[in-house]
Every structure is written in C-alpha cells, then in structure tokens.
Image (cartoon, rainbow, N blue to C red):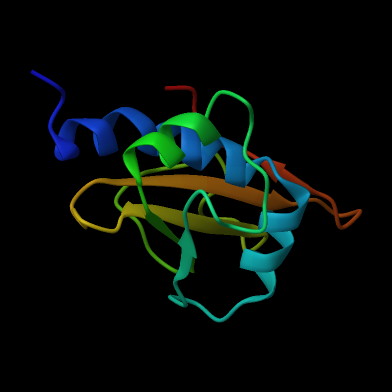
Length: 118
C-alpha cells in the first residue's frame, strides 16, 4: 500500500521550502510580492526544482502555495529585526501542513536564509 497524500505532503514540504527559499528567483518574487499573496508551486512552475525535489512533485502531483507573511508561529534568529522577511509554504490539499523560512535582508541588500535546520 502506498503512502497517503497527507504523508507525501508532510514528507516533501520541507524540501520545497528549502528549494524555494534558497532560489534567487523565488526569494526575489516573494520579497517583491504583497503579503499573503499565494503563488502556486507545482512541477509545472517556472522555477526548476532540484533534481531531488522535482521528481516526487511530478510523480505524485503535489502542489503547494508559497507566500510572504507578516506573522508565523515559529521563531527565527532575527525575526524581530525589520530586515527579516518570513516565507510560508503550505500544502494545497492540506493547509495545516506548513513550513516557514526566515529570510534576512543584509545591509548590502543580499538576502540570507536564516531558517533553522530540520
């Protein structure tokens, strides 16, 4: 018997979060977007996922939303700093399956992922 859809989403939400929060394309897209604007993320997305993440998204037709949010229940090392931007990644079919990444805008304008390890 195969894994349930819920368990597949739980298994891959962290990988999607890591791929997108470390992608210059997605970080810029999310940073430039309005808060809470949800972008659909799936195997057809313009961004090419890592070789590790793309096959399961395609095989299982997993879809996620990515957005920039003002609040999250998780703490990040610089979350109180005004240069910190939080990204939210949620399973399309199961909105309770969520991961957040903290991203910090350095003084030089570069964006750094400050998400604690898994």
